[in-house]
Length: 249
Ligand code: PGA
Image (cartoon, rainbow, N blue to C red; front, side):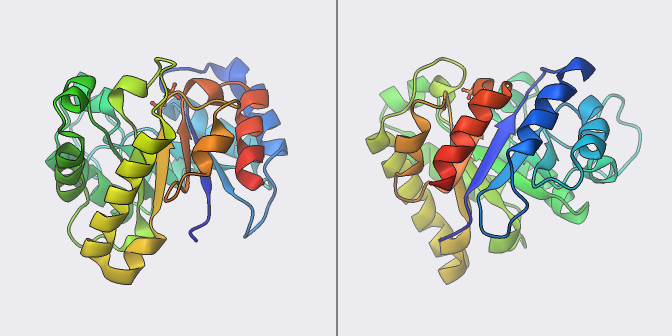
């Protein structure tokens, strides 16, 4: 069984005043090789301070996206190397909000994931169908094509994390059912095993979409769910830690 990963995604939330919340979260994440991993993916402006403040705790810090290139004339963008330099160990790539807001395609996401690996970060590669695609019965087809297109050639099974986030469940309070989650996670696992062989069984597949302390236990018990990517409920230390504790059961 891969080690569970409980990851927060703060999106475009958090001023320096929120560092206190991050400190409280870090206090609840043990330094351990076997307990679930705790991670906060933060706005770039908070990464360095968050790392400095929580050093010595078990909490890991990540970024929310990175540019495919290492440096250069790309005003407003951030590279994997910069995130790593600030203290990040992970980076989310291909979140549906970035796919929608910034036109990031599977091939751009694959380039970002490759950039993450080159920069010393573990990419969390996001996939997920829209409501229209689900209603049209295209879920597994969409997921298969996103997985095929978004994992970069040459990436090792032990170097990546996948997050399944149905777009219609993100920030809506509408959670996918355990049957829906189980079906897609099982399908992703089969695709990973086809691609990587036995090693595909070790790739962590996170669920994301309106996870909260009340539903986390049930979701984390679904087969092939190896953790969560948590948006809204990761902003409050009490909620994030309540989810983390469910994962640790
Ligand atoms: P949510 O966001 O938990 O607020 O639905 C999850 C995500 O977008 O990663």
